[in-house]
Image (cartoon, rainbow, N blue to C red; front, side, top):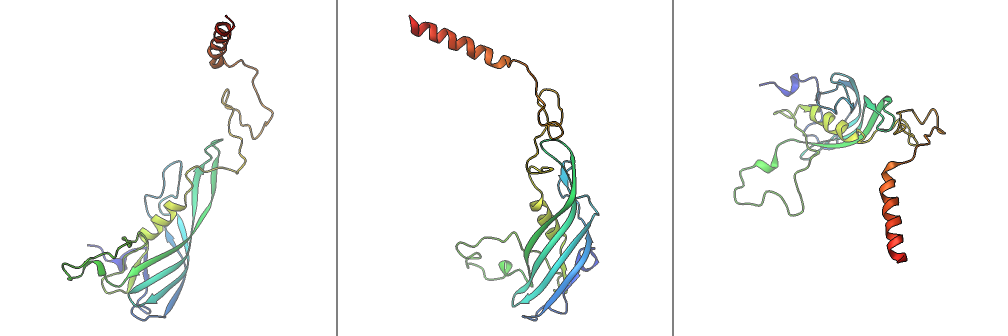
Length: 197
């Protein structure tokens, strides 16, 4: 079984673990984990992910507050042009010193009413000396990726008739009758004729 401290995403927090009020600043680059997006929009595995912020020790664990930035690739959903620029997200995450939900207090309510398992909780090594940020990076970057990336907010997209880029030729158009409305025009004429009787 691999150890947390051997992971490329391990951050040493031994100097602050179990010392409430202590902090450790971080400004480092980590490899992007796998599984962030897809071919249309995502972050390539192994790409440089910059993590800045601080780990702050509290009574029952460590809180990380900071910013994650990575070079993402995307394709504009309107004009299909490639988009390459860094995606940045602010993050707050909790690294508990021990899992208080799995204690030996049988018969007690494990989760307080209104409280659910936090999705922003991540593991420390067994001795509390290392924070593993692999899942944190993956979760943060996946949430930061846009569902419908655009090369620019006012992208005009492509012509539905010929595929021409309307950003390059905004006055582009086709003088073609829309045959989809021919049936409606016939129906309208019949209805008007029936009403006239």
